[in-house]
Length: 438
Ligand code: SF4
Ligand code: SF4
Image 1 (cartoon, helix red, strand yellow):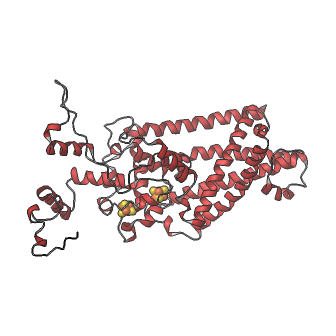
Image 2: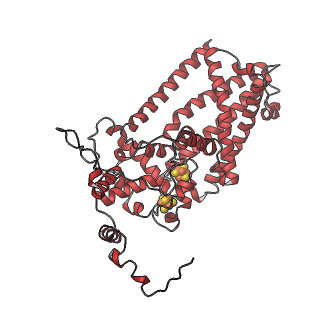
Image 3: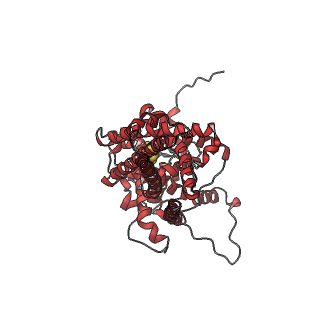
């Protein structure tokens, strides 16, 4: 009974802290814009099954991708066991899901195998990060804090899996007719076979508590870590922008102006008599209050894996741009400004996302090739925010390079980027004898 009370109190505290953090994050969403439509549920579901659950994009790197995919699939299976532990802890029951019979055996056996695989994967990830020093994990945005964040999370996952297997061993050793199967833990049973029943009980309880406490500590650390993708990746993939990669979203305010110019008869409805037209909002993105809520979800989902930066032609050719940094900066800016701005929408700290976090040079380096979007394993759309920040630079700050300004003038005057009149466009073909087929 005392175990039940202690566990219930712990569960309430851990859930309360997690609820507080989630509520805080939701308050940041209220700052953002709502310009994102969730349509085509069928296509979204298919994408989620393939990319999020099937891990199709992560598997493009066969070896390390497979290890990562196994960790993800293992987490899904092990979460069923964690839910059972939470119910057992509150209700004082012993392996409450055992009524599932052979299915239960399958779940716990695969959970045991996955725990061993995850231990191997975590060791491999630590070696890659700290000994092999994979280039993809380097960059200005990859600070000491980012590396510590990754290392601490990997060590926590290791402890979670070791304690899970320890718990399985303690259970097998202490219960004569135990339910389920634990093929990997069984191989290590010799390590505790000489212990007294009291010591085995203590061994089991220590691992049980270590595992469940670590689950809740991990859950509460996640929102502050890059490992928040454990929670965010499935919803983010479901929210994928389904348009073709290189299709740009028009800005409604600009579309309206152009339509008015091209065809004044189809002018948008004037505001009702006595009411003034809404003041035009800022063009593009200057700061976090200009981003859409989907941009913010993207930033929370970023795993900092660097696959986007690795394929970015601007980054490869030595430019400052790193698409991963764009995501890191958006999240960092929201963390710095969000708590104040959520309480007072006149708050300013004299800084902005564009300028103080992301430089003009980075933004102008983007070729809009969308290689980053294509490569991102969690379907983050970097280009949307880069283009909107660039639109701010051009339309609000008139801060385009001279060559671009000349091109804009030509488009305005000549209907094309070239410096000659539309009537002269076919001059190059004068005197050429064209052969007409058919
Ligand atoms: S779209 Fe821009 S940021 Fe993305 S890979 Fe291409 S150049 Fe890099
Ligand atoms: S944006 Fe995507 S590809 Fe780039 S670091 Fe983040 S998760 Fe990885």
